[in-house]
Image 1: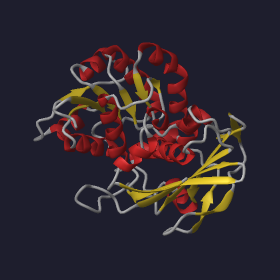
Image 2: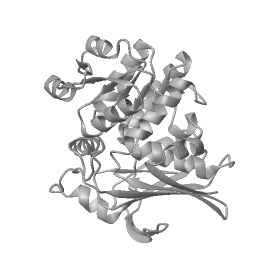
Image 3: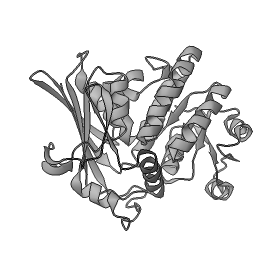
Length: 342
């Protein structure tokens, strides 16, 4: 548990950041609230006894002050294309672990490309995409692999009852589209491919209680970065229920609203990870409530394990590489209900 240790949360006042702050407090850590907007930090800190330390990514000295005396930093501030590198640099200067909840493909790819050597050589820990998109799918795929050292294909299908995007999700999506233009990305043959055609629409046979649903195929999410970073699989594909894609594409879809005392929305999810080798198929399934809220126990469980030394490697590492995937997934109860079918 946290035992009163300070953890910097950059982007603490955002939708996901607030869930992360609450989870840290619940587990005995002391969040240090940081981010670009001093007024929103002050409002968040009011009456909590927590310290607010404003910082911007173009001010390394302010970032250093934000991380001073902390044992780690969790980056919840999108667009991550702008925040990951400066906050990782600050974590490396401070000598503390870095974790983020980035779902932006380009930001995740950049983290592995630009920091892998430095982090490994210094023994630092950098865990990108430790969130619903990226971390959870990667853990499920790793758990489904079991004792396999390689596989032919990994498929991760997301069954969301709805998708009410936060302002941060919309901004991150806009940044990704600006960088990528009209192209979409998929991972095939062991490398990235850019395409300009429309992604396919097909039916995915989700486990019950969801059942068969229309999905958008090659709806590429952060898992397609994390999975091949450590698993020997040449084909990695993610899918999203068509209704959820329509929700996020509609500019009039409202942001998520609280449906319980913990601030969670009434959205439900089922994530179906299927690994295939030859004619054999293995599967790991998780379901729960609110994709943004569940990111908090994911990243804080990861943080707790990093600080306790319950890790398998150092450097830039995906969730399934650095942690014992089945054990980690079981620790997410009651936030996530799990079924493994190796």
